[in-house]
Structure formats: C-alpha cells, structure tokens
Image (cartoon, rainbow, N blue to C red; front, top):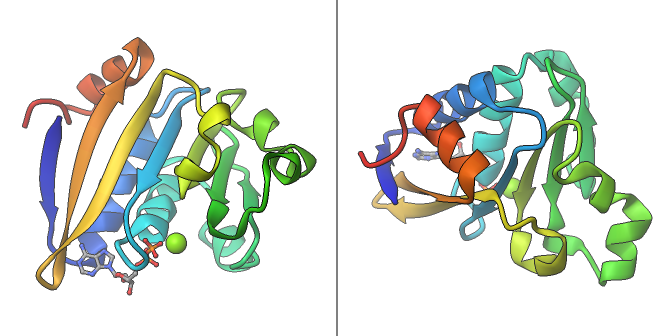
Length: 155
Ligand code: ADP
Ligand code: MG
C-alpha cells in the first residue's frame, strides 16, 4: 500500500493526470471515500491524462451514473451513488464499461462487488485536515505493473 498527501484540489487533479497518462486499456480504478473526499476531482485528472478534451468533460451531465469520454482510450467514469440494483447496472451497460477497451474509474464501487474484476486498483481518498490523503493498493498483476510504471508503489 502506498499513501500520499494531496495539498489542495490541484494536487488531486495532478495525481489523477499521472494515472491517466500511463493507464492501460482495461484498467479499473475503484475509488473509495466519503462524499467530498475528492473522487470526482481525481477522475477529472485521469480524464485529462487520457487526453479527454476539457470542454467535453465540462459539458457532461453531472448526475449521470455512467459518463463515457473519448480520449487516448475511452474513459468510463461511473458515480454509483444513486445506482439501484444490479439489473439497473446491466441496463446502463456497466459490465461493458468495466475492464474492457478503456479505463474505468468507479465512484462508490461497493455498489457492484460482483462487477468488479479481481485485478483492479484500489484508491482510497480521505480527509486530512483541510487537505486530502490518497492510498493506493494494487489488487492483481496488471494493476501492480501499472502502479510501478507510475512509480506509485511503496512510497
Ligand atoms: P467527491 O467526488 O469524492 O464527492 P469532489 O471531487 O467532488 O469529491 O471534491 C469535493 C471538494 O473537495 C471539491 O471542492 C474539491 O475541490 C475539493 N478537493 C479535492 N481535492 C482536494 C485536496 N487535496 N485538498 C482540499 N480540497 C480538495
Ligand atoms: Mg463525486
């Protein structure tokens, strides 16, 4: 497990950007953390790192459960806070967005334990005073290689 202090929203965004720059197709990032912990800010950084045009991001509906953004790879950003049951997840097509051709970033991943592949990056955000802390864990070989390439393991 690796842990980093994020001193302000820009640091959260920059951290995500680094992940997005090196993310391989099929990568799954499960983002845990309370409301306001910085998950969406991190996702916006990942989008930037994947080369998603900034205007595309800004113009997207804020409350969509699944947002698909074009970048170097497709970016699937999920906010499952309002997700109902697993049927709804399949109806939206979450199974086709996770671990397939693009990069998946999942807020509130505990809503879909059965759809989370064994090999994924566990990313936990928490409050640290007025700042934030991020903890990373690689669950599986693809995620481990990825975090090593980002030089984000064992800090
Ligand atoms: P979440 O998606 O987890 O609910 P958001 O990404 O929407 O959280 O962020 C909530 C607030 O926290 C935003 O105002 C954002 O600018 C701020 N924020 C993000 N990262 C940090 C940080 N490292 N330090 C302080 N504030 C941050
Ligand atoms: Mg959010």
